[in-house]
Length: 300
Image (cartoon, rainbow, N blue to C red):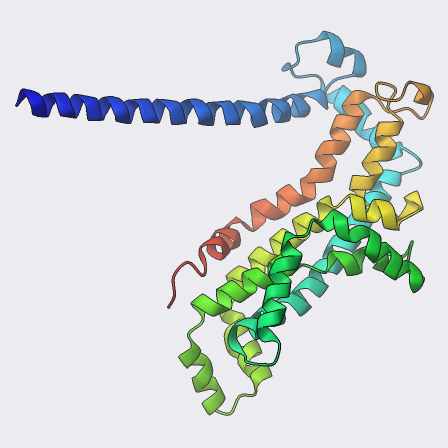
């Protein structure tokens, strides 16, 4: 009995130690990510002076928040509003093309037979492993040869190239769509297009939502591609526009001091505004995202 009790104590001790280590690691990660976000939320409610002399985690005033808001959206005669609109056009335009091209591509790779099918699948996997920044220069040269540099298409077309979405769709259609169901639709006289649009696509709603979310987030947060493709600030998305705000902040660029300068609380507010659309999309699509992430986990 004593040996059994000793073994149980050791097992309990190991379990307690493991939970303690896991708790410490989780706490460190939460603090590492949460503290900067909390500071950012408080910073937008302060004046530039209060931000440097007051408690970092104290709340400022509504008046300072309104002043920061007005300074942000008055910058360069409302450039921030233009940048947000540009981001929406680029992100949504690329998203539509991604869904129209990527979902059928994943279906074709998973459930149809044609020449070079395996080669295309391997090519999709290889392209997924290539950093997107490595493709910017050849894409720039291609678009420059056809005169698209500086136009919205120079951003929308490369953004719509989303091999990860094709692969996600391929995995879903390979594992979660009963082939017998598709075969029955063909026997009933449906063409391949009808089988896809009337049978497979409605069943794939969770994975379509997941691909749409990942594509939108990637498009909205893309910086390097539009920075290279768009020479004029009028066409900047908000992520690139933040560099103009940064250059107008005396704390980072002392030569920018003047009537058009931006203070640190306003820059903090611009950061929050730039990520707000992604947060809103995430909050309203959680149910579909969870369904999409668990889809394809088991074969029906």
